[in-house]
Amino acid sequence: MNPFFKKLLAPRHIEYLSVDGNLIILETSRLVRLFADRPEEVYPGKDVRAGFPELIGSEEVLRAVISGEKASFELKGIARFAEENKPFYIDLYISHHQNEVTLEPLLLILFEDVTENMVLKQALVQRANEASLLVSALASSQDYINKIITSMADALLVTTSSGQIKTINLAAQNLFGYSETELLGKPISLLIKSHQFIEEIGQQLPCLNGSELLRNREVICSKKNGEKFLVDFSCSCIQNDLVENRDFVYIGRDITERKRAEAETAKALEKQKELNQMRANFISMTSHEFRTPLTIILTSVELLENFYETTEKHQLKVKQYFKMIENAIRQMTDMLDEVLLLSKAEAGRLTFNPSLLNVKKFCEEIVGEMQFSKSKKHSLNFSCPPETIFGWLDEKLVRQIVVNLLSNAIKYSPQGGVVRFDLHKEEDQVIFEIEDQGIGILDEDQERLFESFYRGQNVEHIAGTGLGLSIVKSSVDLHGGEITMRSEVGKGTIFKVILPLRRNTAQQ
Ligand code: ADP
Image (cartoon, rainbow, N blue to C red; front, side, top):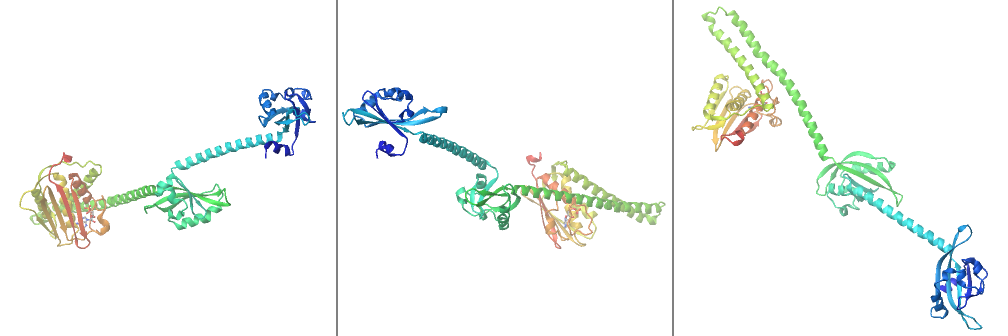
């Protein structure tokens, strides 16, 4: 339908007037003056432009409408101000019509009060503006929240109350090794391997209010590659806006590394405690070890006093007591030497002074000394190749190695035991192999024997300080060599030491 007629038919406040070709008012409706800018000018015989100045400048168009060249003309949203300066709005519809009698072409001007429409439109525009402002504010705050979630270092997961993953941030993707699409819609049990924890979450979270959290739950999780690791989760429950339902929020942090560090610290503490205990044992043991030779010295000296006026007959006895004193003093000196050496080694002050050593000759001498001093209850069998072996070794340290290993082999063997000492050369290395048929070393003790003060659990009453092997190890290390051991409880032990014979640059 023609919009003009549409307007006509609608039940609205419409007034009119008709004007001739010179725009002179011929006829007006009763209330048309209400819509005029200057109502006093709106009377038949007056120029219509005086009362409605908005028509000034539209004469061309109006002439075209009156001549029938143009069907109609509209002016919309003209503002007028009534009492109290309240605005109202009118639309003008101008069309051609004819004097029924004279057939003179005329213009019919309709005025419609569109205030209600305009106010409505303005309110709508304002609402639309407000809504678009709100939408952009929402979008930017959503964007802001997304940025926070994305840049969070902690893993964030949101699931439905039934455990289906709804949201996952970048940190969580990196932590678990899955992409976002691989996880959305999947059950949380894909990542969290503790069913007990998932059940606990399902039961406890809905009972918490918004600000409450289940904190610091350590849970075993699984990465995409199957690797298991520990995650510390804090969980809360949030109201879902769309439905009467709640979502679960999980914030997690990989604590495998932290746990490992804690375990290491605990282990180090435990070791420190053990070391303290071993030091305490050592002190009580050394005081005992010192007391025995001192008692021997004291008794021997007392006895010697009795033989002051020594006779031929007592000569042998006197000799025996002197020997006992000598042995006791040597025993104490050895022990003090060991302690001194170890303290030097621990302080990193054990020096390495290599010189060209005839290793074979040197070992033969040591074996000779030991054969002389050891009790006759063991046999010490030394074997070596016919040719001489020369090497850049530290004489003092090699003595520590050989003497300690040989005396241990003797000490931890039963009476009548055979100790085998084999010396040979392989390329640029000299190899010392010392084997006994003694008590052997328990598996659980083997890896700790080189620690200072550590003694095997099966030593029973056999005296010792737990320092010898620690000194041996430091001496071997200073040479850039290697020490290994094989042992079977009740059958015997073999220690093998390999030392480089050539002077290398690290030894200068
Ligand atoms: P210790 O003074 O106790 O002999 P070491 O450091 O020389 O100290 O040796 C440490 C521990 O290693 C010994 O207490 C003993 O348990 C074990 N051990 C060393 N050598 C032997 C061996 N040949 N046979 C059996 N046990 C041995």
